[in-house]
Length: 288
Image 1 (cartoon, rainbow, N blue to C red):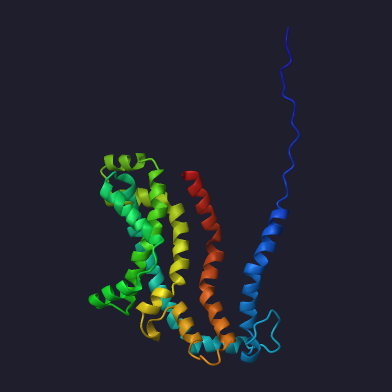
Image 2: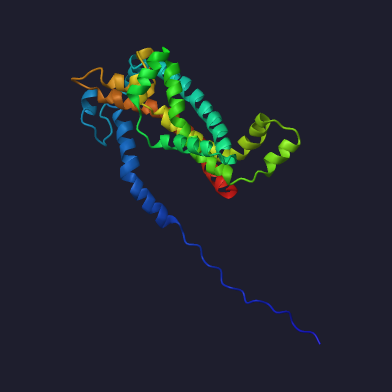
């Protein structure tokens, strides 16, 4: 006697809810806070000085695109400031990532109270206000006040806490099997750090690097006090000097054009790297 196999009744598939209401709500929310300010910024950079003195959403009656942007590049020292920003941003990001991950690895794998205190002291620097006057005094005593080196060292010291805070908990959640296996194979500490730790941290480090680039690129407060002269100015400082050059009658069309050029490198980097950032966040959540 044979019995028919039991089969489960097929359940009707649930229809997926269309996400367009969510997208529509987010778009309506972002419109007044993102799109409109961006539109005002760009469209008024195309206008004449008189027409841009009262910013509006309307198209320019007479176009001055080439003249405005050429004036900013020539008189606003844009190319020099762009090079200075790159000279500062790239070494700062590399130094912060390397030093921060080394410190985070030591904090995560050690039970020493001294290192635990050092971790909290480093992490709390994220919320501490910038100490401008003591920083200027220290750099003056070292003879590097007003130079790119002094500014670079200051940014490295004040941004280390971000990487340490993000990566220490991430390393603690990772098993140490890979490190022990590499150590049994005779790998040195540096080899373990370079070949094991850094690859495992790549998702969270990429996201942290993007955050640091935005923060360092847009830094103005330290640049205002720690850099001297137009030749050493970064883009935010150059924008401030350019906007404050004419106190009585500010050329808003040129100021808007300078803001567009200052933000353009970050905008291009975001467009190119946005998928990598999102995938890094996803991978980091899965790994953790």
